[in-house]
Length: 319
Image (cartoon, rainbow, N blue to C red; front, side, top):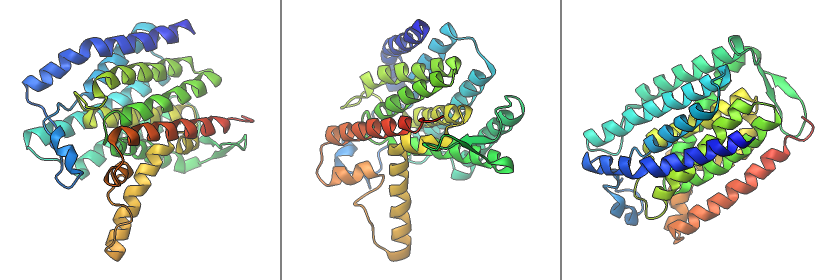
């Protein structure tokens, strides 16, 4: 157990150590964020803030895990999915900056990469890791066997979670803080199922996100970009898959779900009726435009994440 403390502490310390170096490098290379003009006007002052700060998270996470944990098959796939999604995000961020636009990779290219990684994970969960195609049901104490639908389901979970975290990453400290809370919950789940390797991975997420939040707190010195948000989404999703708690993630990661649903509702409503349900989506921008201070939105979303994580953990009853 003490190794978990060391893992989290090293991830945190390493993020604090490499953070200023990477931020300075990003500034030197002029890798600043392009802010969409359709967003809240006060966000325009954030234009030029270094992005791709997710590199801080990935370096810290990887260093801490490899120092204190033997790379098991499960841990290999956790790292593989995380780094693969981080690479997709890095390419996306790079194109945004080089092309001087707010959109990076074409959607079809991004989706193909995410599909491939999710498919590889699903296939190996069934064949190499032999975890099986059963998914645990919250609160009911039993499971459901998805059979041939398992691999498509895994792909949906990984892609959905990664992009949900990406949507959540819109305010200083929001995605990092919510992910810290979700990762703590998955540390508890991993330990309760005896997956010490995955617990080491999740506490490394906690430590690296805490360190990153030091620089990402309002006003942010750096943004995680798609490099960080896609990687973190992939990381949380892969742990849910490997612990067979994909359905628990709908509750524990409820903030991600709410943010995504708000976007879906907004787009659907506008296409069908020409009217918007929210002042702006994702949902955190709606509250900003209602007059809430950015810090108030962030802290209240953290509180909501904590409550939902607690409810999700209660779903372990009987398992």
